[in-house]
Image 1 (cartoon, rainbow, N blue to C red):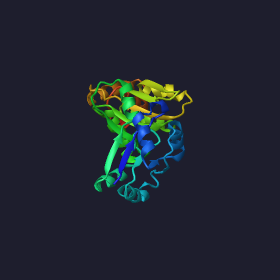
Image 2: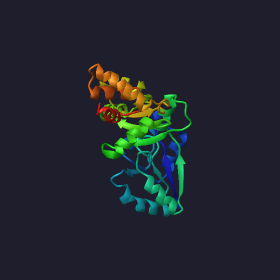
Image 3: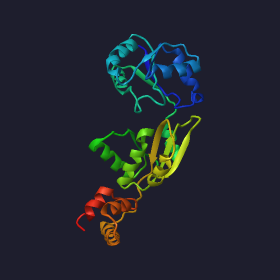
Image 4: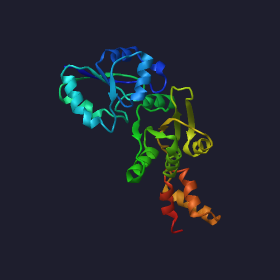
Length: 271
């Protein structure tokens, strides 16, 4: 019986490849990869001649049993993703579960991770964090995720794209997210960039830039100090008497409290 190797690959800089990774990829019988074009770039760099084939979200469930059969027949197979560790917002989890259930040795070859790298870069003083992967694009589940991130008692990390970044920041702001966060873009690559600050400040800075590439966001734990509803209402009454609209008041007070825009608007709608 062969083994299944779960191999971490560079998240951008090919020089982050480990000696052990090269050795394993050179000696296994087959490499499963998310994108054959991306895999070819890595394997050419390493001068690895091992055959490889695609294994991605659209075909993994069709291939799982065949791959497990090959391993049981004696083949050693490696699984890689486009970047970082397989199964972290990438395919492979079901293959690992099936292989393990059949008594196959599943061996990890640790490598770079944008999740761990970005958390280390953040400098936030907590022993743990919650990782969300890619957030839901819409609906109640997305709102639940945003609220959890904005109010969590420890840092939160999630992936996003440049196209969705502004929307993500807006919704964190609208749901009471006033803590610091770190936006990591193109980690380990030539154009690596790290932005630090509050979402309300960074959204103005990001909006002016022509950005490209993948993004990892680390949101610090929620600010522990909470403001009582009574104080919010007192401030809202003063602002209403000065002629401010309820919408603008709700937006302003959400930035300095743990309440979202909608929650504050509901508090003051009868005033």
